Image (cartoon, rainbow, N blue to C red; front, side, top):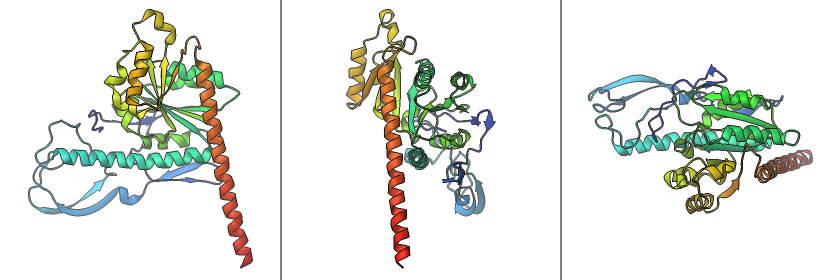
Length: 335
């Protein structure tokens, strides 16, 4: 469960296939053919141990003050209630915070593996976050179509149900993997790690991760992306950044979408930008319309610079690695 809002993931599916929620938090390995594989460590799953339970602790079931062995068949993905909820007797708020910290630390560890994999492949990876109905899928489709022939793109789609958005992306010719989170309100790093091997091999490309429509929980979960890109529609309130400060603090790029509708809505663009920069002073802001194409040239130029920077970084890393290998071979020859 997510302790921010109390949601549960239920059955997570990738392209309609249920996934093992305990798989994908191990380590990535690249095979000679360029494919990737991840495995979990057994010690993070089933293990037997003995300890004494205090009455009523964990899950609301008590064993009394007695000592007995039992087995856990999970990867410590303990469910927990949101902060402020009524807990089982003996479970303190401090314990809930401890579990939340452990959840985010494990997510961040997988996110670091994702980030390294993106770097190894020269992928410029963006995490698109917004409220439902902000137009992020329409903007994504328009962007992919505009980049066709210049930049290779792929998409990981996040929704609670349906493959509708992934189908819209696939219609552009770009590969898309659909993650359905069930009752979950956000993607996490493990889901992304599980989806990545299902994409075709990518190099020096643009990877979009379209998160579940939600301005709360996705703010807390690093997926390994280079940037969180918040999309705010002019059909939403001008004060949205003040109402959802965690998201606008976590994002470093803001797209104000549907600017073609400004004559018909009560939305103050400059005030919204001022509110957002009150929370995140370094925010990069672009005003766009997926419908008319207004502002897309600035957005597309920014994307191309990011892809080029990721490609250059990958090549530099490869060059440094080759230098190290050559130096080592020279040392071995001298012996």
